[in-house]
Amino acid sequence: MSTEKIIPVVLLCALPASGKSESRAFLRSLPVEKSRAEFKIGFPTIQLDDYPYVEMMKFFDAELEKQGQTRPFYYSELYTFKNPYVWGVLVEMLNEDYHDVINKRTIETTTPTKWMLERLDRISASRGLPKPFENYSADVIAKLCARFDDHCGRFLKEKNDYAKSYSPERTIIIEFARGGGCGAERYPDFFPLPEPFGYQYSLKQFCPEILSVCAMLYIYVTPAQSFEKNLSRAPPVGWTGSTDIFHCVPDVVMHCDYGCDDFMYLLKQSDKDNTLKVPGKDGKTYYIPAGIFDNREDLTTFCRGDVSTWPKDSVEKIYAAMTKAFQGLLQQYKVIHPEM
View 1: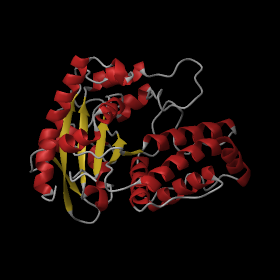
View 2 (view 1 turned 180 degrees about the vertical axis):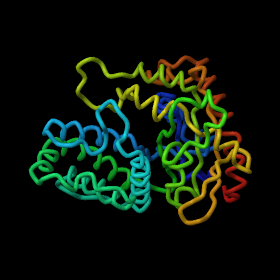
View 3 (view 1 turned 90 degrees about the vertical axis):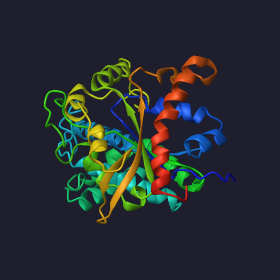
């Protein structure tokens, strides 16, 4: 077992299509001991992400609409949440996933879709929101289960596998994106973003167990670059499979939810360098060490290919940028967590 201390939880955040997956691929390509020594990340990592829940909400809505039922989450497949406080529900799902993983808690069920629907009802109610599936008939719910048991079953298996294999030697990566409407570049008093938008709101929803040990790696691209790259990952015409790879965010959502984000604003508000200051749900104040990986020159697209095809000069550039991003993060992490 390595004697190198690792960061237990890294929040990986950015506007859509900024290079999060590619950045993870680069870090994963490094020798395990090198990533531990230089970036304090323990591989293989545990990957938690709120996108699978966003995807399932879209799938459930579409199937319910086919049945002539009301959509619980979205006005249509091209629009934003009916109730933006669902952003908080997504964080609570991540909180629960985190606790399941570190406590090695697995869920055994023969009805994975029903488990997911009941979980969304329970967590929504805990946030003071209506239960999204409370008023549908048993027949409607049965049709949802028949349609999505394979998909939800695969998700649950991966979640259980992470829980079974977890050890403190593995860093947990929590990936999510938050933002607000277009306009920040035109109005100097645009920030803070109104609740429940942006990182200011969502970070406060994380449990103290995460906030007390995490760091954040933020991948920086401009909103215009995010818009452009988002279009490049649209699914091919006629695509009906998973959107793990092809998940182009609808244009209206990009303008309303990701026209800007408040990361840089929050960084400036903190009274400690290279941190985000977050008031926790337990009344305590947490400082999250943060680093910025500047991807405005697109240092990551090459990482989509096989490692054997990666150009040496591209690898050197992303390595230098990633090292710079972690420099201030790790310095501040060691101040806040001297046991590191």
